[in-house]
Image 1 (tube, helix red, strand yellow):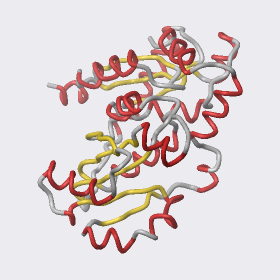
Image 2 (image 1 turned 60 degrees about the vertical axis):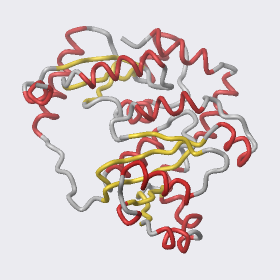
Image 3 (image 1 turned 180 degrees about the vertical axis):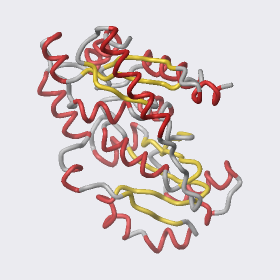
Length: 271
């Protein structure tokens, strides 16, 4: 029935900012994904938000659109709440969506693993996760605990590990999420995957962004000893230089707004 809904073009629609992800947004996105309908998400443009609310987002429209893309099937810009305008954009997007089917790569590893902090989820995270999913049948994401971030990076995360876990769990490219605790090693993670999914280490590929290639190559012998593969997503360095959690966190501090303020604004404008 769910697949038939998509073939028939049955649609569920939400509009949102997608600067940060809230519990209410996750709940609504989950409901619409489980309905089996084509899920269309409209993202307010920078110009619209500035004109209507007199404020700026932490992330520009293109980044917020990328984040929304991991929750819905179709993403479209919102410059107006006029029903007829929105309907025309959605109908055009559906036609394009139904006319192009994604063919899965048959040479995927059984299990892919991505590790990160994901503090203030941004489009760089999303792109890396999406590219990682193309390399494997099932993608697992290990989110670093608050204690690990504090110990390894000497800073307190903006969002708690639980919130970061919840955000990742709702992404369509992610099949499961676990924590990387302060004492966890790469060997611990591999062992947990092997035990939980009943696979061999050779079925596992550890996936990192291309910006971490030099760092992770230093652990090449360790990966070989564990019997797992290692791969890197191809992300343009010039793009990655502009996008980072550190920059979003800095902009948040400079705006003198709290994460609670951003979450309230998201919920007020998620329809």
